[in-house]
Image 1 (cartoon, rainbow over the protein chains, first blue to last red):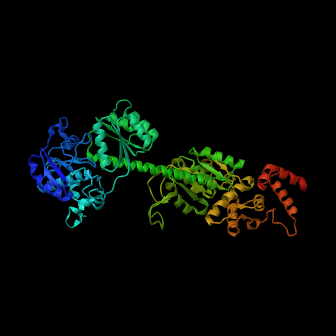
Image 2: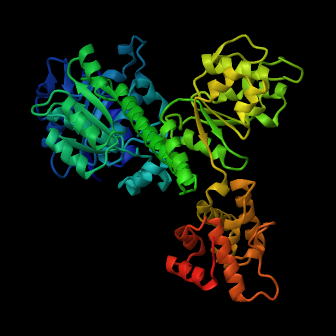
Image 3: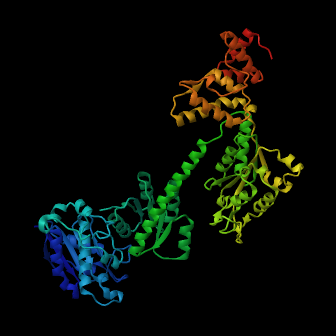
Length: 192
Length: 447
């Protein structure tokens, strides 16, 4: 079974989400998930002028530290991520590559002044992690409203979509066979 | 998985910005090319068509503003979005004034970027569609051109071209069937109002009370039977051309009302109080002698002078006979296509008949004659007996008439019709001039 490396980066109080996330990713992608500490100093990605972490630098570092026989690497963090041209990103991934990163920072209801909702936070994290890893399988943004590959530029959009790939995304993915195998009965039921 | 269609060019000297936008748009399914400077950007423009360009304002060498001008010279419809590091009113105004679709300040909200690209793509699509529709309109206009190469029609077309560019009111004069409406449409089609409608009103076809409602429209309940508010032709012609056919039939009261509208470009619907402003051009047509009608007090002088700013007289067909073969061929082709009939021409005898006829009904009569001939005629050509012409001096051959006698009679008739203009007669007869001279000599024909 191919390996997905899960790298916690400044997860702090969100560390407890990693194991359930690993289980969900195994279910979704049929990969064996291994947790490893980061092999680099995440502060390299910190941009003092913005008070945020550059996700492109994180991706480059994650990729550099990942053995070639590892299928995928996913950095999970609780800090705020950005790419230079945008104010923030929920996560980022290499299109048809191996590395992805996702942040819980803007998925947390509390930063929007709402009561904490740990379950919602976990669901959002799962969806964004699956979404970013989907890009590594060369999946582009999808217009199906319930497909996990729907682009979400604000957090409520994440809640509207499911954590599943639509049939067209599934069929287009080079992983389509494996995605089907990963599910009971060899079929993949999308929730819409 | 549905992907976006569209292509984006990202031009920024800063690698991280270029790279971020490249990957962001790639994941949205767009085709993206990134360029680090103006040279790379212009090279990419020559190699690929783009829908949207993201352009950094400040770059070493040629800056974004200058590059945008070059880009718009290559493709005027491309949507350019300027990227700037610092928001300032001056920058925004400069960018928009120089033709940019919009501008963004780094860093951009992801949601704003997504919407901006979709709006730019939509604008690009609409511009393309608009251009295609305009080309289609121009094509339709050119297809429906006026047929005629006679000096008289050339003069008419010169006048049409001349007056079309202005907003002057035009009075088209001519006998019934000469194609006055076609002239009005040509004026409209060649004017800056061509993308708005031309609204024809046949003033002679309606009694005055109905004409008033037709022109001015009415409010609900304005009169018995006015169950709904209805826009009048004047309102419908807003932006375009109002064509008043048979203007001589308009009653004096209506002339006063229309005069006011033409002078103020304002009116109220019947039964309404709201003043409606309109901007339209008026083209009138008549087969009446309006000056005589003015003298006789049947037509208001002030209204006459208001509509007779520029007049074009369309000559009757009998005064431009050299146009008949061209027009006959035009109608033949049109009806052959409509009727799916393989009649490909008009025999010289039939053409001689057409040339000899006086055409009191003008072009309309000619069109009807060809249509009728197409119905009754058999391929490959229209023969004299297919034509519904009566009283022509060029009849069919009399019983017992020899070929030579028939030829003599035919040559004599055509020469007479052409005022003994040898070149024109040769053209009608479809022979060379030497043949015409030989026949004159052979048959001893005289003026």
